Image (cartoon, rainbow over all chains, first blue to last red; front, side, top):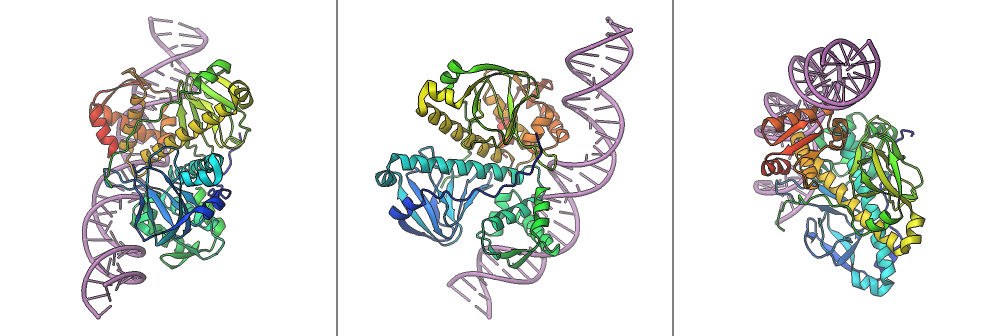
Length: 216
Length: 216
DNA sequence: CGATTTGTTGAGGAATATCAAACTTGGTGG
DNA sequence: CCACCAAGTTTGATATTCCTCAACAAATCG
């Protein structure tokens, strides 16, 4: 068995069922930090990000709020195998979503289409969750931040990359404090690996070196 | 939205399709540390643990070997949505597995049965991976070890619990070093929360207190 | 423009990794 | 039965990383 790097890019949004949701979905606007659904609620609706971004997270009794995932334009979320949401979802910024009920999707595309969509969603969620785990386990703060910035760079066509989330959300996702995230970002900048125009926009200067750090 | 503890027990083995695999599966023995499949190999076979235990892991270029999951008697593994294995699997100890090819399962139970099995496997994998993530993110070494021992206790009917894996595998799963795992175990023992008869067998003395520590 | 939120920087301390050594355990052969 | 060995585990001393607490700067909003 050959040891190999497994740094495959984040799984992109499922593409097949987008069309269906695009056709029959109802447009809904959510303000920054507005809750889209809460954990424990019935999972009847399926969402497609049109503009903006969304995070899914849990609220824990100890006050921690680990972030499960971020969703960007084109991504589908909210579709669950169980009847209830296991996570809550909030808008990271003012966002426009296309929303449809499961029954509407079945009516429009048939049971097959919904099953295919559910399958794709689960495959993607599993991939992303595993990747998330790899990004954290046994990695230093510098590696985590590098890996995170890289994954954003990989899903962006524009060299100028926008951070949809603030430092606190990054920290929660990476299992770090905001101070540590901030320090790592300044370090990476001082090493000329990235360049932040402002705290929400950055360029990757040395992709190779950044990947080396992220790989550990 | 109510903040709540989400410490649900680890998802048990899928129960419905066991019968099918039990009926048509071929018995195969694997020695301790023997590879069952490697990452990148074609994923044609489905496995059910009869006796022993199995770990799935990745080998990383930096020498780390994060462990994805452990499988115990009754658990099904190896069934993938993709055509290739994304992880490798090795026997933790001498193990007996029931093995069947996907095509044999379809022949015996129909396409429906395989799809149901795949679905159940993915739901369980996703749950377990999320739970694994929760066990690690933002938790101290003591919390991780407590949570891990507790999850083992929950799946065991016998009060005397057997650790199927050595310290190194625990450490890899928990994102710690073996020394830290060892120290935490000694601490928990000194606090009379658990009692180790030998390094592979232990009792939970104070389940409540252990859960409190794990919850953080 | 002040007020509030968000992000950065610094100093000190706690937690964990690293390195090294001693100790158990289980097996093998005298 | 005991000596010996190898593998796994525990313990100790030290170094490093990251968190905590605190102050400050910058951006955002009314």
